[in-house]
Amino acid sequence: MYPSDLDITRWHTTLKYFRFSRGPGGHGGNMDTLSASLRFDGLAELISLFAALGCPLQAIAPGAPRVERGISYDPEDCCGLVDPLEYFPDFAKPGRCKLFDCPCIVAVNRRAVDICLCGAGDPPDYWSVTRQDYRNALKLESAFDRLGLVAIRA
Image (cartoon, rainbow, N blue to C red; front, side, top):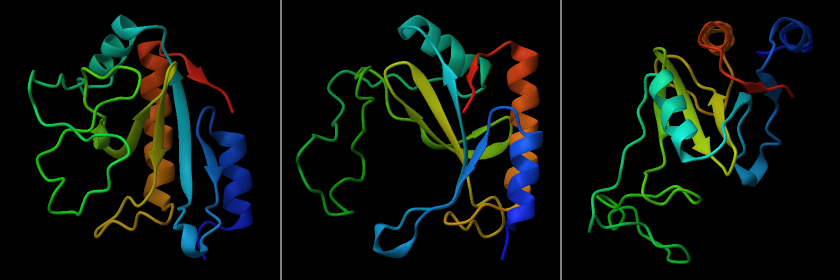
């Protein structure tokens, strides 16, 4: 089974910002991930950070239909709804996107952008971390350093 304990130990010594977390599995449906966080301070820095990552934040058009908290949606009902960022509601959640040609799952909280790598492959397996995810982590860390981005070390 990949990754082995030896792989994980090697990753934790070679990766500066990304850390491996094994999902507990079961009915929770939690996945294995390699994840890192990039710090920002305020909306202007958040917008600049996403521009530097090559994935500009998407502003939500006035009057666009949005996901409303506390409402359950059937899959067909939420098509076309925009899911706003919790702390910056004029912008849409990035979710699954590509950073420097690496498939990621990206979330934004109050002061950090969380980047998760999992399932790189064809077809993608979002429950597992692959060798390509590890290579993508190295590529992203190099880009973070080159751009002078501030990663939060785990």
